[in-house]
Length: 632
Ligand code: ADP
Image 1: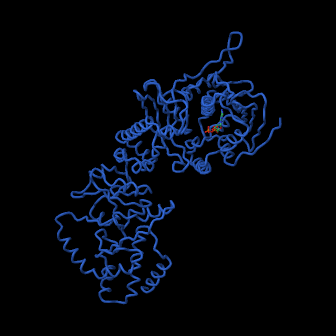
Image 2: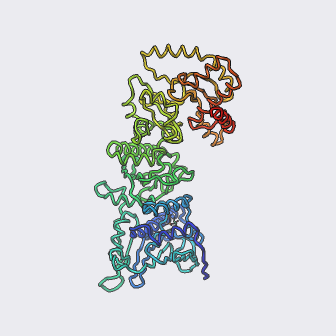
Image 3: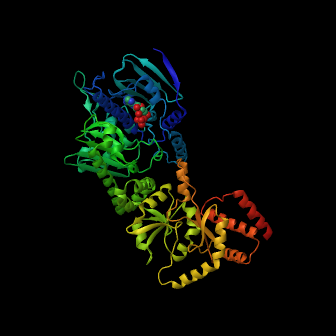
């Protein structure tokens, strides 16, 4: 047979280099990765045979086998699972399929310089490549179940790999590592030692539901030695809590998630009764890179009576919990169940509700018991969870209870809504918030001036989804959620009649200017009025309570929806010298074209102050420059 040589895809090559120069100090995990792949391959074969009985494959003794050859210094992990076709080997092993890989590698290189690379590896399915941490050559022989011909893949981890068709390959896959020379300093990690292998399997792969066998090399009696099964094969989710250690749970998490780090939280739920199921869910400690991409694989693994049915079963959790990993094992579903059926199944919907509640109550517990871990959770997943405030009204209260937000009350400590309400001033009847791109850009917004002056707390919301949910939710415990940039704001409590009288007087004084300015700015502004929000700035723009804000307008346009341009409201600060002067000039019937330009400039300044763009930046700059010139 002919051997063909291929080049690794660039990203794959970079990843291999990282493996060879081993950024990961715990090399033992390579075995976990190979066993994990083998286990998946067995799951897949069983499932395929279940769906198509005519598949010409032997499923009578599905298992994983580990062989050690001390003399040749090789270690082989073999499975009789689904295997790969010639094309699949090239596609799956020669390239890295994940779309986020380039970004990931970049981050990995940076982290490596900073010494933090360990945690990053493994998120992107580098599983098979991890063999190169301990081997200087890797050979893989595989035959896809139902096909006649097998394939041999081989590489020394450099720029190329070879592919060759072989005739006598058994069903499934065997991966042979040609181990690097032994390190005399480090006997514990001698991978030709059966004892070492046994320990590693026990430690990382005990829960694998297929037998992992090893044929002992050193045996006393005659004849062929009997293979030994190294793992207990017990499905962790079916065992009781006190039988399973945290480490064991964590290894299952790593197997499922391809994340090499510990999860933040483990959640167990065993439901008895008419629709029985067991589940073991994990909240990762880090949000994956592609959490907000369209093709993010969401959902947990579905098993039926211990038989693996599918990955990424999206029917089991709502989209806003798409970061949760784990296993759900249902007793009363058909093994042939499809995604379409699951979407409509009444029991599955009940299950989803129950699992959702369980995840949310776990977060709530975390919040009350472990502030630091809760903070990690919210930092990583808060943005996703907030989607639920819009899409899942049933769990709105539970979601609001675990949400936290940046606030003017503190530089760095976020607040819960409950915390905010506790600090509310006497007579304050709303929870105030401001939205924008970053804390920095909104913290000094003119809209906050009066709030600051009166010591009223405002939530600083900087996620794109914030405007949407705040609008949709509307209130918290009977208190309206109010944007400080929308509608009229009246911060003067009762008993401030004087302030009221004062305002009436001002309204009369300014009536002429306000009406005239509205006409001048008609294209963009539907009303010009005196402000109660401003103490320092001359002007700001606000929206009507039910108007779309500019950010939302832009968002809808970006999604391809047509939305009419919403005119906004210009508010003037009657206490500001600039505004006073303008009124004076108006009443004195000064040069109206000069005055018209001033009105436009004031409007542009207000737009700039909230982070917007003047309509005609060049014209704005020209006008300001001319006026500056005159002051020199
Ligand atoms: P990951 O397991 O994270 O997808 P790997 O690089 O370990 O990444 O494997 C890439 C792919 O190669 C797997 O998704 C699987 O399709 C295939 N593969 C790896 N090992 C085996 C195996 N033992 N049997 C069948 N297919 C395998």
